[in-house]
Amino acid sequence: QVQLVESGGGLVQPGGSLRLSCAASGSIFTIDSMGWYRQGPGKERELVAAISALGSTPYADSVKGRFTISRDNAKNTVYLQMNSLEPEDTAVYYCNVRYYTSMPRRYREVWGQGTLVTVSS
Image 1 (cartoon, helix red, strand yellow):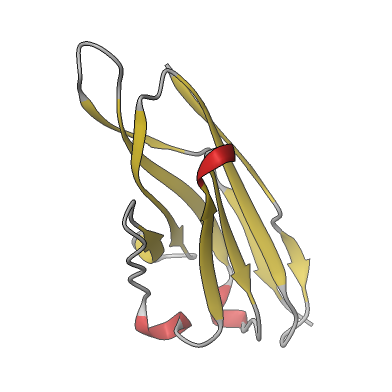
Image 2 (cartoon, one colour; image 1 turned 180 degrees about the horizontal axis):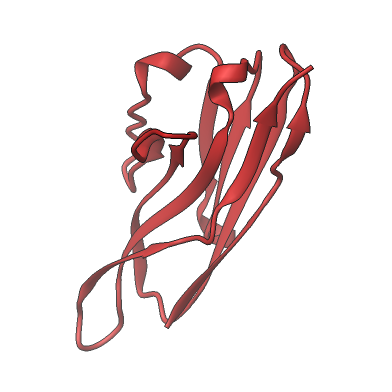
């Protein structure tokens, strides 16, 4: 069983910054990728950014140059630094972790409960 604990959401004014964190714990052999998705009002869930075990970092075009994803492998934690926030960034942000379990070795995916980010004046 793997659990994700997200933190860092909240209300921020346009142009402001927030930092999201997501810590994974439980029966993890090794983590493959960690990422953040979001779902805005009336929209489908979309990838915001991800970071692979080898360090590749795909970003959604809408956040390039404003958001930065990073991970601390020792802490099984992924971060999303969000700068120059816009009202269009308002959404519930979900952490996603893909990992291998211990024996038997299985590839699994787990989602966080979501953290609300509201960008409004």
